[in-house]
Image (tube, rainbow over all chains, first blue to last red; front, side, top):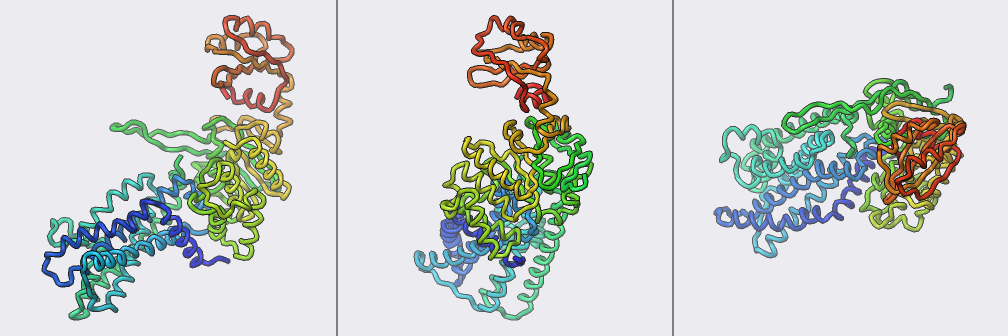
Length: 261
Length: 325
């Protein structure tokens, strides 16, 4: 019998195979990081920070990872709906959540590539260099960041399965998150009413955690605090998505939103 | 019925939609208005009806993709809404057209992926995929990307996908739509082969000769209701006292059709529109001779041909559903 892990693996593999054949996805994955790297490099070059390249690479990586995840949760569901495969995969004995998780995993794995592209581009063409003061903390931060992005993606995927307007929803959420989560500049300079929104979005804490580990920890307190918050939010995302998937399982079949017509 | 694998009782399905832009109004569209039928194990059961009659809605409910508004639908004894996990392993569906497969992957990759979703073990999977590719004539093209396939090849891949879990019940929604005559013939042969293997098949089609050739029983559905349910032979028998006059004309007005309907002995009048001419199908009691009366009505039209014949399944369908084909 095929296990859940095998299904997740085969879905992720199929997702990656399919995704790289799409020109838009290839652009997001290979060209967009170079453009973002150039922009963020120019933004940070006069910041007076000696490790500004790390900010460039992290900023670019997170921006592109977010875009890939938006693709995974919204674009793919929309595409599957129009290809007629959404109802086919939905109707198999495999839990729909497991299939979506596999798809998101595939896109997330591809979405990590821009970190390396950005670093290589900045290093080779702009001559910049970066350091990570606490590689261990950085590794842990990266793992929880990926898990968290997958959690939020599951949440979106559930909503997008129910809605036929997923592309509009995707476009609505992609850029505000760049601003709200402090990916390029601190959220403290945003209007106060936006701060609660920033705090409930996991990329905000992921950015803080990654930057902290790049800069080096002076004590473990702040790192643990951010890590705790990010872990809690991630768990909440997964719980919420689990509840939502149970609800949509009935709703999609009542509202007939699995197919195009 | 004792050995029924599909039981539908008083099934209703409404779709909710909105009308207007600024002043949105909720509109309820009735797709099914209380249908009931049963399908026996190993039977090929046909659902015939015009567009929007409720055929696809019925198949979607039975394949657990759609919830009924009210009434009951059971497959293999389980409710299609609420007990779907008990059903999905044993059913599969094939919708006509080029949808339902990943076009940027190869045919084989598609089948491997779907078998994983059906939790089929690798040793069974690989053997079955080879057999299915052979069955649908795609053995040599299995490793090519689906986007390079012709429409007929995609349709055949759909058949292979629909059989990947060796289902007990197969739903086929207009499976031969858009296929060339040879492709359609091959597909009908596959359906017959599946029936010999005791698979239960629920089929919708617009092609009467296909339903006549394949189905053990046929339900004719119109405006969400079943208007007839019988074997093709019995459906045709209902029309045994009827003959059909086929007239090809260049241009016909509603006024003239109304006049034809008033001729004594005429039961139904339907028009099949072609590019340049129209085929008028007039069903009439064969105790009457209406040909001259009809030609009198059409005296100002260009009549290309006139032919009288006995009733077919298509005529029974027209009689029950009425209007244009």
